[in-house]
Length: 337
Image (cartoon, rainbow, N blue to C red):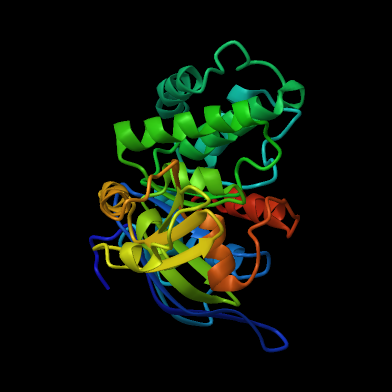
């Protein structure tokens, strides 16, 4: 295993009582400072994998290291290096925002003198200064999300796990949450490991992606490399109704993979449309066929997901006990195994 990676697993397996194998031979690596997206349908093994990486579940077989530490041999040390934000709120509504942050700092062994400047910094960063001494039960959804991010960052972790953190937020709230995440990454080089049901978040934020299905990693790569696996871009050319068939001409253009015709429309598949569009238009002109319109359809992650798993990627939330898992984690703090 490469000790320079922020997160690494080798043939990670988790089998539950009754023989249910939730995670099967998962191997992945996450580089320091990157945002890594972990996608999969409900029940695919995402939360089980995250739970093993964050020491909430013990692997059945295989190895995993987080911040260079083995999660089985050094669980207490791993917890000191990571922060977690779960789908369900874990903040105590009867406490103020500041008190929630003080509690988190205490659980991680920080003294009040260590906590105060860090909390002040995070309250300012998360736009929570005016609400710091109000009870959290009166916070809006977006404020609670920002508070939970601040709580996760009090002890200055190197790695942040985000498990469906923006479920239930409106578009403005989601955009605000991810703005703070980007700031943390840029200014503190925090590594982000995230799951989400919003594919736009993955496309806009993640450096690399892994797709898990039935407990196994079925694809990894960048946005572009995964999209190229399902055929790349589609260039649509519209020609006059009386134009001659130019399918063979278009097929001969360098970079073109497949050409199909539907009346006056030609659909041309190619890995990347850049550079190919101008060649297609020139080929049409050389054949004496005028091009009346050009459009480019780029492959989406939804199309990638459907092609690889046979399922659409639904933007839906679900309750699988993560709030209680988060409570267990926070309750451990510097505690034992």
